[in-house]
Length: 310
Image (cartoon, rainbow, N blue to C red; front, side, top):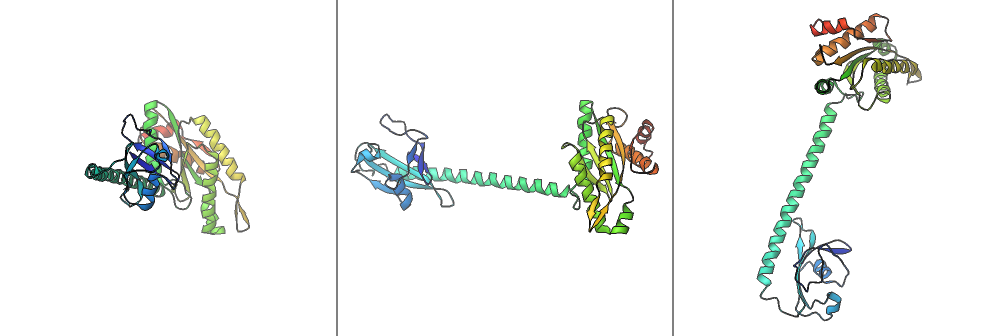
């Protein structure tokens, strides 16, 4: 019989199926201090008893041979034991019993090595995921960086094309950002950018992505979004940002944003660059039109983007 042990029980893992065997596979036996398996584990040595004085205490077993089983790191896994309902010597079985003991510990070593390997793979995968996450984020604001947004947009374009759907790509720029830096300091400008990202992430869906595109310019990727719904959401964002100042060193810094919205629908536009050009054109129009507004890219802008005007 092979058992694995814990602080309170020893669980039967493997046993022979003879008719007079009182044990059951997966049976949990008490791991009390008077038990034979407990003696093997506590002494960490082979135990040989050719005649047990009180067999009723040991499931009517009248002799016992047991050895501890170890993991490669020296920790005890459990026991390997041989028992009989008759008193007897184990001289004839000792050689094959010892050989079987070696085979089992060899198997335990393989299991241990595989387990360690799997743990290492999990640790490596976790590190790679953390590294990828860190390298895809803007250090100041925590938003995705431009490279990550480009990858996400390409993947979304491919997915949306297959489904014949639509999604929105948005460029958003902080108005008069240089004035904020000049009047309050660059650190205050940093606070404004962080405040903006927190505001965006609090108002957009979990499926939307916010990235810092450069300086005070940000790009939003909004999957499965039509123009009407996107415009409504962005108008709400614009109004909320206008009404919620950044508190910095006793100052309430109010700021506004200009927003250019482009929409991908399966058809003329076929690349992320074209879509960005459309959003850039709409953002430029918002800036030229007095700032603090949302502009949707027109069909003319779509055609110009397709021909690479911008």
